[in-house]
Image 1 (spheres, rainbow, N blue to C red):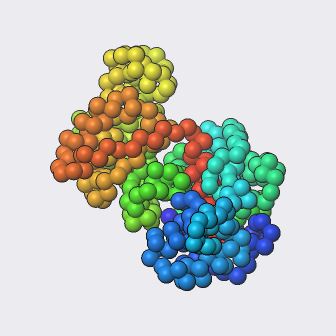
Image 2: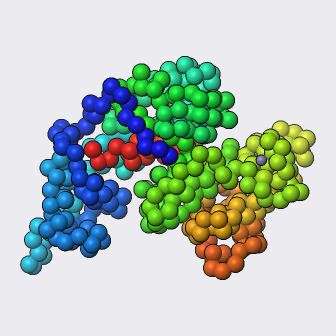
Image 3: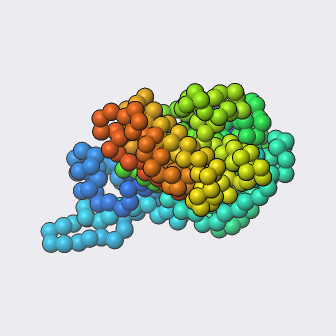
Length: 390
Ligand SMILES: [Zn+2]
């Protein structure tokens, strides 16, 4: 993802009194992010972790305390221990962020604090997929959550499935049927808060990176299944940008089912909720939803079991392929459809180890079940990562 940009003309960043001061040094910002991500820490802990001397650390922390970004919380005093044992923390509830995820059917929105804890949420049906209608609807949701916030909102993140260019334009969204839509600018005309636009899986990856399982790993990949197949990659703590979704149509089996793009046996054909529901509907000769497919598979229905088993196997193969191509061993599996790999965990494992060599196959993937609002929370984290600390 490129650098998300602030809304031009809206750079009077609202925030708690006095927080907006001189530009903070990058090294100070990095310490503030460490405290946000890993929780309250003493100066001594931070110095040890960052390899900085105590005087340097004190110098870097001072502007953060002056600006109110960090506060000294409960002091752990013991014999011979002075101020250095006080814990430095952020006041997460001093901040409010809004995250909005757009889909072809609904707009999902959450209000969070600085640690991306959800304080309120709203879901509404898309009025239509016409861009001006969606802009108005999103502006309305943001305005309602701003009212609910009870304090100024520091930033709004909006995410969509598809390609987003430069944090500005929805270049191509197969779900919304949008091409080259300058969505951020259009929305900024109606929203008086810094706005950030990103791909939805980038948002989910950022949420994992700062507030989820990814916190403890320098390198990890996120693979999601649901309406689409998503892929996010973090190497050495940095998100690796991808302009297309590289795993969506990864070849799995040349004898597999067809996807809409005409590929035989790609990930979309095997593991997306629509394709799986269609396959089971055809076999049972009655319309079957994705949730019904999973329930039927658990109950032992032969057609549903076969489809779910093959999907889990495909997810396993994709996870192994990601490890083979990137060298990243830690895979987080998620997405609103991820229950399929819990139902067919043996097939997931079989798919993973089929071509594995070495210890990669020993490291089980982390399975992170999520509901749909998690996508909106990921959008809020796009705004948090782009604007903290100011
Ligand atoms: Zn395909």
